[in-house]
Image 1 (spheres, one colour):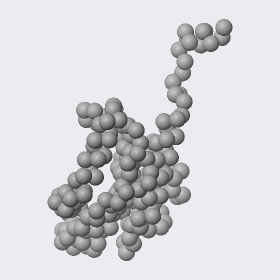
Image 2: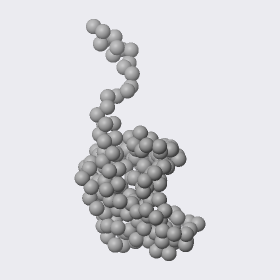
Image 3: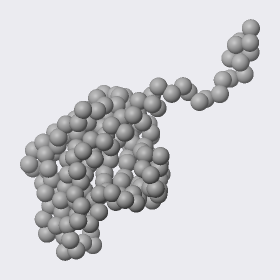
Image 4: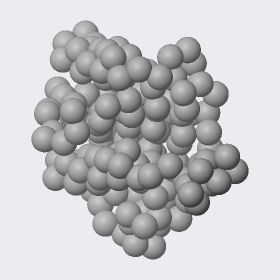
Length: 184
């Protein structure tokens, strides 16, 4: 269900793995891609599959609520800055979340961090479809910005993956008993 190589011409997989789940989650998967051209250099897509849609709805709405306050954005920016170590962060700004017309809930925001080695520009997208939530993170190339249209496009591509996965028939083979009944 995560975005992959077929979504980005020439991309390479930097990492992909299942992550240990916490209570309320069924599965967590992360795929990181290196993008060879364009404004975006790197993409990380974490897909969380919740046991209940209500928990997915609550977590997604909670992040949006956090980012809707200046204190929440400051807190989020501080965590982001710590993740940039060993770079020394001089300043961090986090934009307000902006709604995206995709999924049951989707929004985007950007972070700009000025460091001792230059400016880091990143974009985030959260999209929820039923029990699945994707946390997309992209980093712009040096000198480039993360365009809002690029984040919207990523959200819609992720929505397509989620909806395709939900409508796909089960790949589980039929049991021998069910196969015998089907022959009659």
